[in-house]
Length: 418
Ligand SMILES: [Zn+2]
Image (tube, rainbow, N blue to C red; front, side):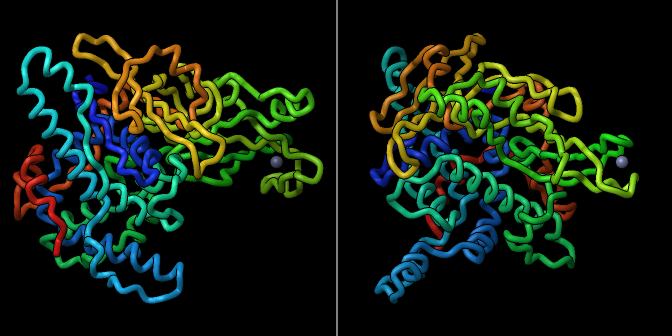
């Protein structure tokens, strides 16, 4: 149930090398609990749009200001001409529009309906522009890295949701209500639907080989694992001149491979009071229900990260693959493959390619043959159990504050604030 329901919408290419953004949106916004959460809180976010937009605008340069800085002169167009918006708001508008289009198409009958279902296209130009604004290194019209775009999207949505939830919490109190997006991002204790679903935590520990003392050296939140072909395999193939290739599971294993600290790398053990040989291990302190791997390897359909997690965890299944065709990250083309589960429980793979503007069915083998640039795996049960904090106001407004999906209302109000 979790992976179906949402419309198989295709984001239209707006001719600005935006396929990387479309592939990213398509991959992220097919994680149903996230979409449902955002639509469920549509009313709340609409009510607080002005404050959301203000926080976003305070934190991000307008495109005009950025362009001015780049070419060091004052442009005729004033920064005020740039639409005032927020990434969270644009997301809500995009999802609402896709849902509305689905509802409209659903009213069609028979063959016509079946045919049209495969060409449901949504234009995401405003969302794309806002994503570019959210990332300091991105430029309109230039092909960017889909992985960086995903991180930027999730980080921003998370921060904006933290700020939105603070608004709710402090609405009827005297607490200061000027939490900036930067502050929202630095407080790791803050949870949102985005972090509950997609954010993992990596923990580094060092174990002294002499006394067994374990010290935690680092904890780091992460939106993805960077699973690459092990260096040893690359070295070997450089000698033979072949293309390096490795099994996806071996690459994951290699990512978490313990590192021996000896010789010059010896570790100072607090308990022993001197430098000792030690073993450094990386593990997952938090395994996200939707785990993304940034990778360049052939990946398996199922992935079990239990051996690298702090506690037993449900296996992940592959649901989305982003393929990058081309030699450089600033050129080529991105497409997204997605597992779609029909109401009868059967799953099939669809390819979303905004260059040909069509959604086509492909085989699982076809998907697995391609080296994934990014691959998302989900734990169906853990994902179903995700229960992020609700965006609801404290008692004064009562439980009615968080009303169910009001997508129509949102889309009707999607004009930018003047
Ligand atoms: Zn020791």
